Amino acid sequence: MKNIRKDFPILKRKINGKDLVYLDNAATTQKPFQVIEKITDYYSNHNANIHRGIHRLSEEATEEYEETRSKTAKFLNANTNEIVFTKNTTESLNLLAYSVFRTLKKGDEIVLSIMEHHSNIVPWQMLIEKGVKLKFTDINGDGSLNINHLEKLVTKKTKIVSITQTSNVLGTVNPIKEITKIAHDAGAIMIVDGAQSVPHMSVNVKKLGCDFLAFSGHKMLGPMGVGLLYGCEDSLRNITPFLRGGDMIKEVHQQETVWNDIPWKFEAGTPNVADVIGFGAALDYINKIGMNNIETHEKMLTKYVIQQLIPIKGLTIHGTSRKRGSAVSFSLAGVHPHDVATILDSEGIAIRSGHLCAQPLMERLGVSAVSRASFYLYNTKEEINKLVNCIEKVKNIFRV
Ligand code: 7TS
Image (cartoon, rainbow, N blue to C red):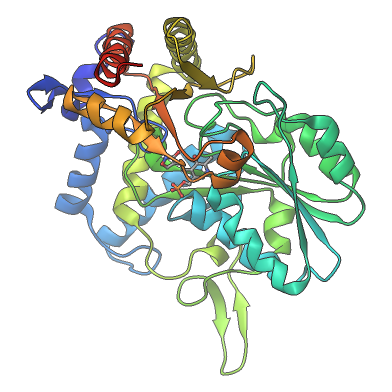
């Protein structure tokens, strides 16, 4: 992981006269110059609409756009036609919720978990108007998923199980392979929210066996505006498109349309070509470093930060599951999380505070908000030392 930081121009920034310590990677990650330059190069030298022109620029743009699809497929061990480009994880999950809206009926059930991000709850609530029931799997005391509870909730009525692989609050990594088996044994579709897992660990969709996996490019060094949806071929063929218009069709007549093949039947209109190509550069960067090295580095940082935080009096870590990622949420007794974040910001340290788009989980934990530090490949132990020193400063200011 040596020499990585020089690739990220923003890490040279000063905030309030202090070196930036960026610990909000679960919200979005910073971008290496390789990604930034790729986007500039696209607009400077190749910009054209894709899939339409016979001209050279259009061919170049199409080729690079489709190459990113192949790279993404390889990254996940999927087939190229199993990768759909969307705007973000939220849109990928909405695509699925809108697509099954027609087929689900009164009495059907969807099983989620209490640790889901709002984007894996709110789209499914749309189905309630059709008489579909949403059921939420509980967690254990350490923030791991209560698998016994999940097994009880999943029945023949369950049509969809949609669960996050890694919690953005608790850090918990869920046993997706096991959950997929439970879902499939009941005849349900298995959807995985991979927003917090794919950037941080090797994810092999064929090994997991899931039907769908959604994630966001901006959380893994790519630009904002690129979401991904993996769907296994049969599952993608079986669902109807969510957005309709140009490019997603084979034939259009006055009263009917024949959809394009997968995956293009889900990509209506002009897509975000430049940023998809930028995401391709992010994948190249990650592949060059090696996902195993990223995982090892994050494990080291996570172990270190937890060791440093545990002795702090009045500090509670939310999520102590053995299998966890690098997002670490905590409460400091007697101090509002927004005050923690504000004081840290005055020292140049960026963390997130609030409900972290997981209000049902906040209710379950009995808190209204938390503070969260989350890490990526460019973070260092020295940055963790600064975080811990500054938390001590917060305690002194509030005399807690
Ligand atoms: N699912 C999970 C588990 C997430 O953590 C997030 C974003 C999303 C879905 C939505 O991703 P988007 O790219 O569509 O916005 N999580 C966070 C977060 O924890 N702080 O800011 C965004």
